[in-house]
Amino acid sequence: MLIFDAHLDLAWNALDWNRNLQLPCAQIRQLEVAAGDKEKGRGCNTVSFPDLRRGKVVTFVATVLARLFRPGSIPPIQLYSQAEAAFGAAMGELHYYRGLEQQGHLRLIKDWPTLETHINAWKADENSTTLPLGCIVSMEGADAILRPDQIQEWWNAGLRIIGPCLYGVSPYGHGTGVEGGFFPAGRKLLQEMERVGMILDVTHLSDQCFDEALDLFGGRLLASHHNNRTLVPHQRQLTDEQTKKLIARGGVIGHAFDIWMIVPNYIRGVTKAEVSLERVCDHIDRVCQLAGNARHAAIGSDLDGGYGREQSPSDLDTIADLQRIPDILARRGYKTTDIESIMHANWIRFFKDAWTK
Ligand SMILES: [Zn+2]
Image (cartoon, rainbow, N blue to C red; front, top):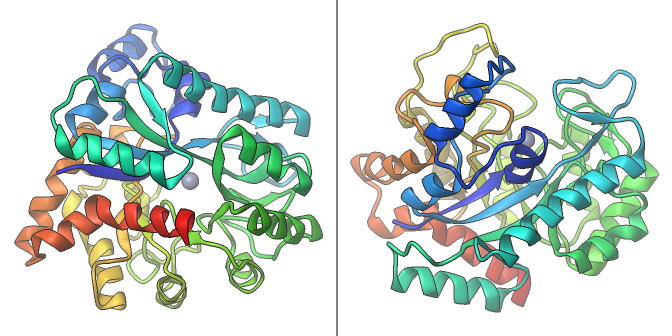
């Protein structure tokens, strides 16, 4: 079954972690082990182009990600000291995707006709070894956007989705781990996004920013990599109330495979938890129960989003193992059409609506 994954930090892995994603995961792991790289997630990556193909994950949203250092922010990943440096780094990541497109590896998808052509080509030849993988570019944390009026420039460069905040306080508002709303620049950012047709990713917004975004922003909303707060009590996850609001707005929620977001009481880097893919399906199922249908739950794996196999479900070796999800859903009584919706069709419908209506 074809899979559409709404959150992969491919450029960040390639540029900041210096991973050659053209190699299979097994070979990238060997190289990192041989280099003696002991940083978190090294030597146990789960995403590469060969493994995406093996798992038929042929369409995805891939990020540009460049964060600014701010006093008091949580510093687990690369932080830039200057906005212009973050801008340059994020544009550089966008050019990585352009380079892959020029070499025939990727098809950059910026509109419905391109997405439709891409999906039809893969449906006609699911085992193709030559068709390019499809990529919609999003920005995780808007630190690299120098001013709200720069949104148009980013749109012209190919960006189609923005998540304004990431961890802590950022130039536009409050994100994961802190509470507070949008700054005036953040409200202007939302206006500009709506004006140019940019999609808003609510993932990583603080609760107050989430509410403000739903009030202020009249465009399309999605949650790219987000699980459920009733199952994992943490501000990073969506409450049932927030989930219902997204459903009412036609939103789709991608489910993440980082195990601290799948089961409660997991402490990053401390707890050793046996968590299987079955538990991700609990989150998918909850969205379906809240919606009363299977039209709003989807995949947004976030695999290799700063962690690797050590913090992924135990029955997932690489991203190719996302192919185990359809069987789990089938055992739970999901119909084939509903499973197809969750694995790819909900995202396709979402982007068709966003780009044609
Ligand atoms: Zn994230």
